[in-house]
Image 1 (cartoon, rainbow, N blue to C red):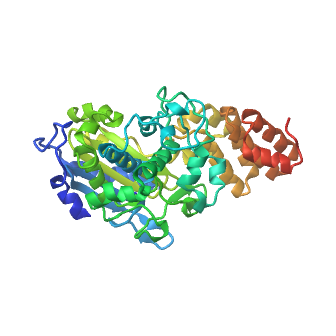
Image 2: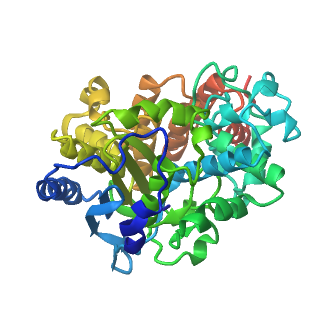
Image 3: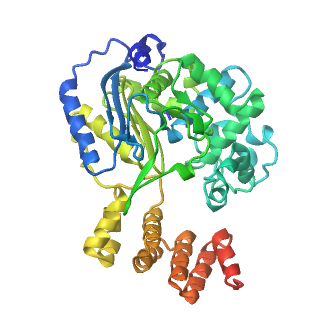
Length: 477
């Protein structure tokens, strides 16, 4: 995830990029003192809700104009967040993977049109022979996400690139390559495997050679999770206090999981967006991502966010390409808190009002349920969950609450929320599986069997439902 001295001198390290006319001639007339006061209030609103701790850094042309720390890096030891605190960057390090691919293309070892099947063996699904490097980079390959029950059933040390690449050999493509777009962690794992195959070096060696060492990212860590210094602990605010995410963290991979400081994130993205040190001018004119953002270098008031997040972590870098203003927010709490603060700061800079701070969608939904009941929640679920992360499926909300309640021996409430989930999202096999589990814990075997069968009618391959029916002595037909 991703010091001050580096951030202060970064503008002298960045080369001029042909796609930008912003340059050093842009004169800022922003009132940074006024902006800072409003950002303070924005951050404090989230702190008062108990849902933010981390770092907020705003820079103009690489020079910090707002740089503050908030809250605790470790609640158990009462360790405060500092500028040296390292955070899990989540998916932000997909940008690092993108840079390595660009370097291999520049070195003549790869091209955007190269086919997956011509580099990696064992992929035989329909349409797989159409998947190119460009498709994998741009999430248009047709691959979905590997993060399902089979993956999460593995021990942490088994959650490796090689394991996921094997999973990918059994994954059907969701659409013909290039016809649609679906965010795909799997695609970036495959890019990591391609990098290793083409270069003859590990993915991490490539990242060090092409990114870490050239930029001098002294506080960015890409391996040996247990030995990362000043490492923050991620937290999730639940119905019954805070729980940490230590039992779900795995080693960094090409799709996410690097660790670092806010200053290093700023250094990296300054080079990523505004120079040719990482990606050449020629490639910026060919790679879809850079072609897409090129017009924004000429348009004031536009902010481009790149974010990462998972349980107990959320990070965002928002770049105003024309103004060369960077907003970095690193949080060791649930998404989308960093993103909300980052976009809020962007609106303040644009002289607009940020959105009002709210509890995370899961906690807000439960508050509505407790105060107004299940029928009101059913009728107003979309409004109650309006601030849920847009990339995540909303059936996760009630599932998460249901399991929280089961853990607190509140089976009746859990069943009520799980049942509502089946009414709102009947096409999701997992919601029926969860309801079955709750009925089984309640002691009603017949209702458990009924709902496990319903889960399999939606997804006949669902491993958990098949396993439980077998344990209950039932053959599903």
